[in-house]
Length: 531
Image 1 (cartoon, rainbow, N blue to C red):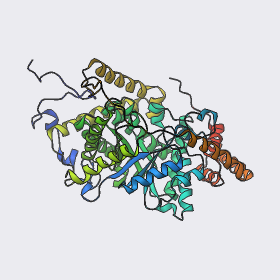
Image 2 (spheres, one colour):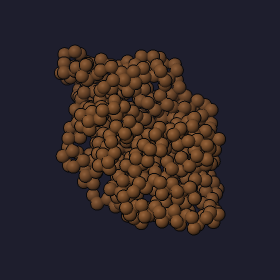
Image 3 (cartoon, rainbow, N blue to C red):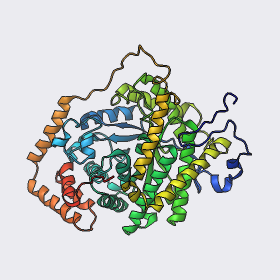
Image 4 (cartoon, rainbow, N blue to C red):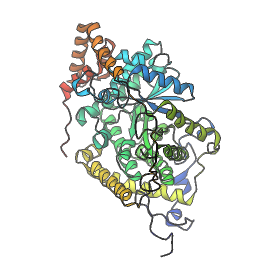
């Protein structure tokens, strides 16, 4: 065998040829009219907007959550001053799990992975001085997504901003929590009810809000391949659309506000092809499977975050290079919104310095490289179009298998997603340990004299203040009004009405996130996986 002739594959198992030409099978079967189209037109392979970044760059977001609302507000305002164009909120684990900061199960976790939000008072501090009609806010929150959205809406109202004028996204994707991440609270059925209740509520009251960000990111971070990330994400999307239809909603009333969230890892061309394949598949699913009529319902609009799992604790400054390449792939793949990881995030929450470098990475790509001047510059590449078609084929095969199991919920309950992700993650780890998969600074080009870097530290005194704040709030409010409002939440939960209105009433009278979540726990129970 000649050097360079050995078999090479992507992480999805797609065999890579040394050279791609018009005579390759994938190229011969490629129909530009059917598979490519024009930018901004079905099937949106080339992007969801005709002019893409020539008209406007993607939204530049830097994910931030710094223990307390005051600290996080300071980071948001700093990043906005540095040219960030959207806010992205990271919440701590108790907030994600519906626990107040003084709950026994929250001890040791308050403020550790993001900001602690217990009440409308905390949300007011989080956005103090930030006009909510002039920023787009993304909130990475799932089981408690309706609560955080309502708190945000209440703060906007207090600012004098109408609900019709606020814009942003809640992740609100519970299925991937069961499959890969674990921050679920309730069983699947009531969790799906909360999701579709939020769809209906926003359709009437918060029309500019993206009601879900169907997320492949966390499944990819857990070890899935690019093909699995597409398949499992779109299968979850199918489940949400069907649940909304079953709840009596019209597809074209809610589908234009669906959005997606993908990772971008290190196989540069496979990642570009992944985004193009996902757009094409979703367009066909929505038009053919669900018979959506509005072209906006066919569009897969998505946020991208560079790969946290690709960052290394060793030689962390090298992560700047990894992040830049992943961000460039996301841009060439047509993302609408982008978060670039800071180089120190394998070790701690980012410092102001590392977050600024991550933001500057996006700005250099957007303003200096010229890649934004032409829409979909990779279109027609024999290699990229071949990868796009192969990823579509692999992902479609997975979706057929999931459909045969009864859909995403049944597949997750049976452990199918989890088993496939674990096998893929194991294969990656084997490759790293054997040295077949090179990770610079980890298994090759190791620096024995590496120097430590300065890390962001969480102040324990600030955590203690957060605990005291939630206790002081309970002592200072109208408890009778809170009790009555929570009883209204329980009554609605036991029936079939939309839960968001009684939840909003409870939060307005300063019920806490944990109290509203506990009320729902008493009606719905908590989920315990059986696989």
